[in-house]
Amino acid sequence: MDTSIENGSAAKDISVDVLIVGSGTGMATALAAKEKGLDSLIIEKTDGVGGSTARSGGGIWIPANPTLLADGSDDNLQKAEKYLEAIVEDPPNNAWKSFLKNGPDTIDMLLRTTPMKFFWSKGYSDYHPEEPGGDPMGRIIECKPFDLKRLGDERDRLRPAPMASPIPMPVTGYGYKWMNLMLRKPFKSFPLIFKRLFQGLGGMLIGKEFAAGGQALAAGLFAGVINADIPVWTNTELIELVLDGNRVVGAIAERNEKKVTINVNRGVVLSAGGFDHNMPMRQKYQSPSLTKDLSLGAEGNTGDAINIAKEVKADTALMNESWWFPSVAPVEENGEVQVLLAERSLPGSFMVDGSGNRFINECMDYMSFGQTLLKREKEGSPVGDMWLIFDQKYRNNYILAGSIFPRMPLPDEWYEAGIAFKADTPKELAQNIGLSKENFDSTYDRFNRMAATGKDEDFHRGESAYDRYYGDPTVEPNPNLRPLNGKLYAVKVVLSDLGTCGGLVADEFGRVLQEDETPIEGLYAIGNTSANIFGRVYPGAGATIGQGLVSGYIAANHIASTKKDKDTEYGAKLREN
Image (cartoon, rainbow, N blue to C red):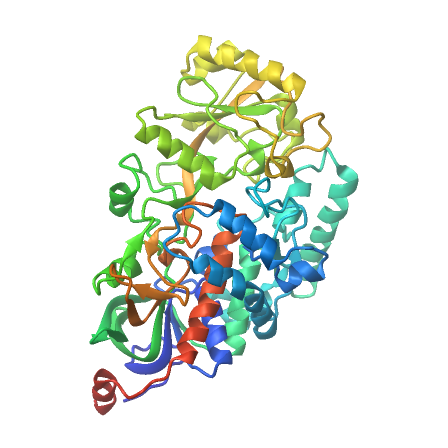
């Protein structure tokens, strides 16, 4: 039998130490396993490498990691533990403690095994900074702009970003904050903008292709995998796990429409994302109201790995949770949404529900935002349609939806699709949208009165350091509040997400557990295939990627520490064929 595991397209029965299902943060698992002397194979259902990581902002939330400390953070594990103890809610177990302990070593491993370099996004606050141990300066690191040409012949296999930049300009998450304030803080913003423009345009002239965010992170991981000669099979879908007693010893996959048998000597790591695009599952576990597929997760995330693991009696938890994210409604029925991050925090704006009333602190972290909406739905008072309201001054000063620059008109197709309206008065805007004129006019007046004082008595907007991070520091006394006046606009908002975060229950070693809490030997789950180790809470931007990377590192080390006492009967038969 041919046991080669090259990247080519042929379907062959093979034998490996570690099989990793999914090519997002699972690539870190392969790199960690390689350092331990184990050979790995990564299989990816789609034709693109990088998973949802490649489509993300690329932030990594890992407390007290070496990059944070080198860049001047005073973070430490004791402080971070106090923070997580204060905020973690309904975790499947105490795996978050293992995450905390192994986080710094994970970043060290990535610095050794990839060409990536990281920096601290200083000032990007934790999501709950007022809690004990919370850090208003943040614990997020990002990959520095990365040259995609370093991938060589594999460049075309990297999953593309959700939106192509109109100009070659690698914008980091930290840079986006200041780019958004280009007309408000020009002396801070334009040096960063010119630096990235020079890097992007200048790079093109010398044959480089710089990217930032999730593209940089996924490309950096992929470069490490390529350099380590770890094969990645794309267009390869997991079909079945093979057991020998209570131990997973292999897998059946379909590669380019042909079945392939993979004998696994040490372990299978499920890193295939959640069930983002499986609408029957989402309606069953989350809400019947989720009838449209609005998730920003990679298109291959349909819950396959979770369902296949359930067939071998794996337990699940937190299936009603996602990394929720409010976004601009799609123009077309099956179009992509555009996330709203800074836009919700900037002064001169507020949000209303279908009755024309404010209903939330618009600045709150996006997971809590979605949870608030679904809680109202369960309580029998659904929000209905949501609208972001802003004035002309807002439109003149800030970027909207990541691509509409200050003073640019809203796209005509937004108006044609009924997801945008404009008017000269509050009552006229309410009439255009179809809201109660009385409710909206009252909401508008009350918001303006509070904004003039800088104090949101209804929802406390601007009181958290996280709220203020994306505010406008030139506006006082509250960088998140300013009365609206003049021409008004409304843009329809929908509840999207970055992916689901409920899934298989994994212990502190990453092993998948059964309902009786006994591990299924040889089976591990990380990232969004596993249940969120922080329970129903998002500690800070990048916590989803952070836990995926660290959980993969933990799983690889545990796999390496387990001895293979004897050849499995399944593996022996496979090699005889």
